[in-house]
Image (cartoon, rainbow, N blue to C red; front, side, top):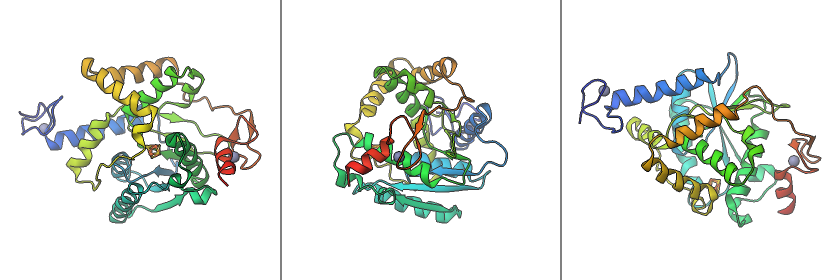
Length: 284
Ligand code: SF4
Ligand SMILES: [Zn+2]
Ligand SMILES: [Zn+2]
């Protein structure tokens, strides 16, 4: 098969692309997404939330060519998984002279995720990881994450299935800064997960593509599988979900209002203690 752009030998199908054209097209879409949604504004200091998995390595690979990015990694304490991706991340950042800061759940006063052994590990992990990113990204204007099209379509559908439409306002390509907390941006907002994987392979980015052992226990996993089936029967389904969400719900300038602050950490909270502090207090 030939590349439909330049007639070289194609290495990717749907659409057929040679290595050079695929990499160029992939990176162009990221720059276009940054421009379309005004994700990065002049003079903003950028911190990339990096786990060492394929999405965050690909994001660092692209952003560091135009911006002075720093990487921030949260070690949740997941044996046999996170240690490996952190090793990959350290090597990657050293090779490109990207400053890397490592923090762990212990830095929050919480136990390793493994030691907590929760019934729903992804819920606990997500709350504490967000808290760590919030606390340790002070001094940056934006936190860039490797969330891709598949992740966003899953998040939208999960909120709809749980009848939590009020949480949809927290999604979108750029979540505004609020009260000392950096804005969050998703430069892979319209990039399918399978293309991130292909980009890493073709660029020779060191990553073992391992998955967290807890992922199969999550609701997100089930929704992701259903979406993959839907995409096979109806190509473009994930993008349609995301584009329709943008039209109906996305309000880029609207900061999320929190009615009160947490009495323990002073972070935004709708209760006396924020969710992260409740978890930390219960586990100590
Ligand atoms: S799959 Fe769940 S437990 Fe594993 S890193 Fe992701 S959120 Fe955390
Ligand atoms: Zn080509
Ligand atoms: Zn708190």
